[in-house]
Image (tube, rainbow, N blue to C red):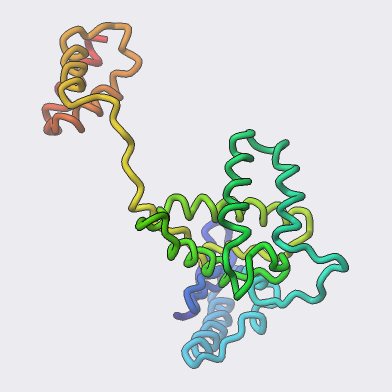
Length: 259
């Protein structure tokens, strides 16, 4: 965890790159890349690095308008008629019909009614929480509650949990657009989707012997009609038959020359 001086990739200005509590942030400045400006920023970077090391670093003190300032500001006042997650969902899902396909609306309704709105968060259901009160740690609680659920003896798949969370993210993005919510709690440095290692691979419609028959037919016939997909056929051949690079290149030159 530290602070370093870096030059912006696009442009001639310097900036500070901060790594702190799992947070990564790039803070730009208007200082050009000169030795004097570098010395100035290096001194500031040392102060910030020292504060991070001793646990006294306060982001807003150094960067009141920084790229991550929204994560550390407290909401000043609630609106006169505060929205809960459930009340906003009911308005949002009606507008959703004009934005996405009917099948997606049907799925999102199911995700919210069966899983998201009744999800336990901070001792209450997610649907009863005010939008302005939502924070990153609530997302982690939602994710953890889904991970602990079971359908019979089987846990929820990571792909399913990610779909539910993506539906919530779409609604909260709309809430920021309409002004009902000011903070983006889906910061990628603080919250990540689950790795989908438990997802089943795509079902192959052909048996191994059927694939061999089809590939042999392509090799023997070399019909000009199939010239548009030669590259994909050869890639599949290399994968399926484990052709060595030299044999693969010879086969590729033969096909491309014939078609």
